[in-house]
Image 1 (cartoon, rainbow, N blue to C red):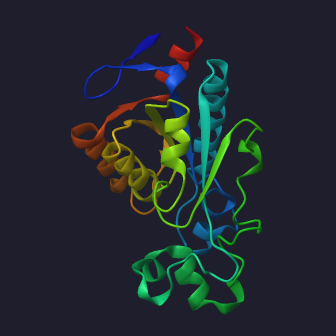
Image 2: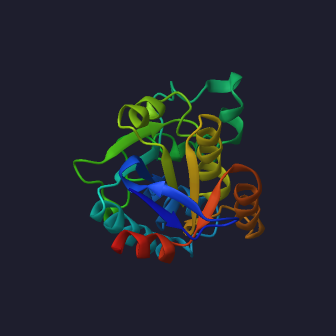
Image 3: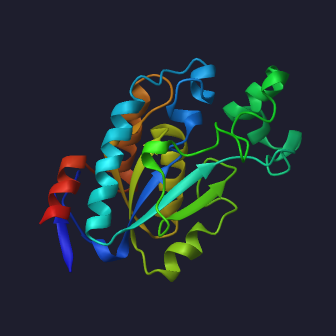
Length: 224
């Protein structure tokens, strides 16, 4: 059964049974004091509010039988999946850059098996949730995300997480290109860098890539 959401720029109908709540990179690296973003000097003061909202959204999604998908950014200890010096990822991704600049952080930032890599305790996945580890901004790049969604009949994706303008938007764009229906939950995301980047992603989504809703709208419809 489809539910009509009061979305922007216009209402959109979705079937919660064929939808997924996508939790992007809610790891210590991006949301915790002492994590990679914090060490890089990025403002993480808004992260606790996003964590609280996503916790509520996960409860709402599970209430209506919606799949929860966790994306988790990380590298092998030997950086074999980083792309190396021949890849732009090697030069632009914050964790890789910091580990080159500060050798004492090598193997500690966004490295599989470390505290920095782990999803924060408050949002710990449940056994039935999907977890997709990625080594690029987009959750579709070099992963099985597309096939995992399609084999479950999932067509609509609700996006949450950090950072809105980097991994969230990158994955949302690829979802659009793969003909999934992308919906950004605006107050369940947090940008990296100046606040104008949050608004830029919201405008990009509303004008060109999908729809936006508030957490309150999503939660109201999951209680109906």
